[in-house]
Amino acid sequence: MNDDALKEALIHLYTHDSQGPATRGTHEEALRARCREAIWDRLIEDGLDFRSWISALVRDLYLSDAALADGQGIEEACEFWAWFDQTMWTVARRTYATIT
Image (cartoon, one colour):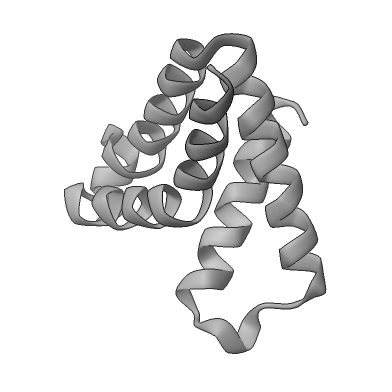
């Protein structure tokens, strides 16, 4: 999964998860698994590079000048990060820690 595909997938999953469990379906669960695999692969390849990538994603989505002008801000960045940490990052990081 390339950077753009992972970005779009994460945004899609976050949007669906934010709407509640009633909107989750088989597609989202398969996509979630592919994203976790992509995160895992990136952690194995270069964990620091992935950390930089995800930080830049959050900055661009919620803290860039354009995002701030659209009403986004630190609260939305924190909400996204909490979601990512609990649903995507923790699972991949926990698996990564067991082999390093």
